[in-house]
Length: 149
Image (cartoon, rainbow, N blue to C red; front, top):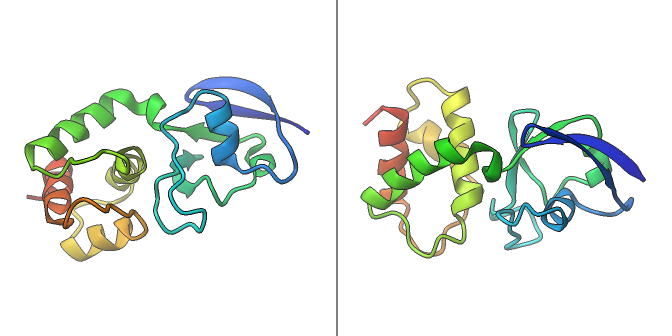
C-alpha cells in the first residue's frame, strides 16, 4: 500500500506493508535514530512525533501515518543539540542508546507543559527507559532545559 507523509518537513510517498510498523518504515528510509529496545512499548527508544505528539513508532502501523506529519530527531537537530549539551553537563549522558527517544519526549514536553513540577516531569517521561543512569541527572537536565531549576 502507498502512503503519503511529511517526514521532517519533506513530503514523501512510501510503500508499506499492512503489518509494517512505523519504526521499521522510518528506519528503512534512513531515520536511523529510531531504535527498538523492547517491542512491547515499554522503553521509549522509538519515540517520534506524529502531528506534534510523542508517539511510540513501534506500536503504530505505518499505514495509520498516511496524511500525517512525522518528526524524528533528524528533524529537530538544533533543539536536540541544545538539550544534549545540557544532558552532558549534568552527567546524565552515558551510552546514548536511549537518547534519541528521550530527547524527542523532552522536546515535546517543552512544547506542551509550562513550569512543570518534578512529578509532572517524571509522569511525562514514564516509559522512557535508561539502563545507565539513576535518572537524577536526567531530571536535573530536563529542569535546566525547561528553565524550572
